Length: 493
Image (cartoon, rainbow, N blue to C red; front, side, top):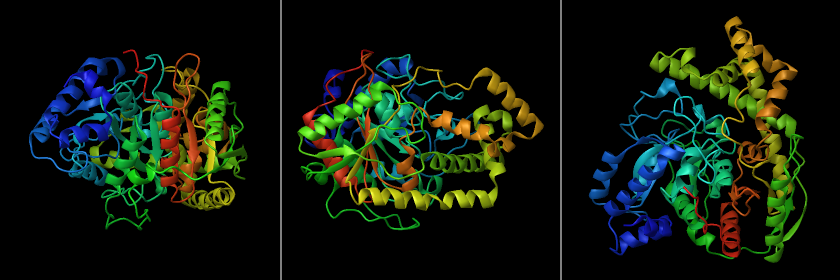
């Protein structure tokens, strides 16, 4: 199959071609591999190709709604049996997965042909994808800029036309941020809807969920159906799902929705004019489609929530480092400096403080629920500014020197109890302060690609829904996609 033909179809469309016998899985895979060969050297999206495994799978019998469709998984928490899962870290490059993670198993059950693993920052802790282990991933729309993170490799691969959709996950915005940077659709499902097993009951205290980034809404909807096709008997609880498939709900015209909109950063940091214009573009579309839009925001203390969010990330980071040191014999030099500093802060918090902060997540969930008693959805920017340039968010040289000195002295963790910690939290979240609320509260949220900056870079807008609101979000996204189609331009790679 010629690339120009291959790129014409989304995953649902490619699966239909296979089902009708118009193309074989092997032909689709070879088209995907050829595209990867042509562009991956420029964008560095795929860090661990799997062509031999993929060719064997494509040649065999396949079944499922996506039988024969090429696919990529993220090199973080999406384990492929017999393959390493690097997590963007030097410390875990040699750890081979003994079994598939449940989400990978379900993608394989759906007939997808996985042919590689995509780049991610170390342990997924950054909103850019520039790990020391795998090198920087670049945005296909402008190679000088980031595709976002932590699912930046997956988003870059989809935007570059290697695959129509790819595996991603989201613990603080890691589906929505790269979708916003790369002109893609990205839905973070609500807490517990997608299985996290078998290695985990919940990811990041329930804040994280697996999913995909895609070019079309119907792909995300149908792939969510594949991920939620059956309960996980080992899960900590059973999340409710609608009686009808998400693919069907996405085809429905949504009712008139009441949407609260805010462009104010919840942590008081600047919001670029382009991000405001992206929301204004969405408001015009919504109004034209008959929805009711007015300024409103949840009554949440954004700064305290940011502190509580980063506390969880810090303690999880410390636990991950300890696990890898135990399993691999790694030492501190096998981890990036920023990772080590965050882990030191996590160790210093202590069990009581961690429990208190995690307990406040309930308050934020209640406050967002109160907002949703009046408004169906919350509309904000996905990002506070356009995609940054590669290296722009690197830790400054002086800060790195000070950090190394504090680690050597064994006192780096003390910073978590000072004003410097608050300043570091704010600086870290300033480019993307809008996404964490959905993770903490367990609500579904999506980034929709409705805007481009004057420089031609994508910049998405975010909708956050109530518990069980995935169907409403997908229906609205499909309506917006029909009114303002976004999968019409191609990066000039």
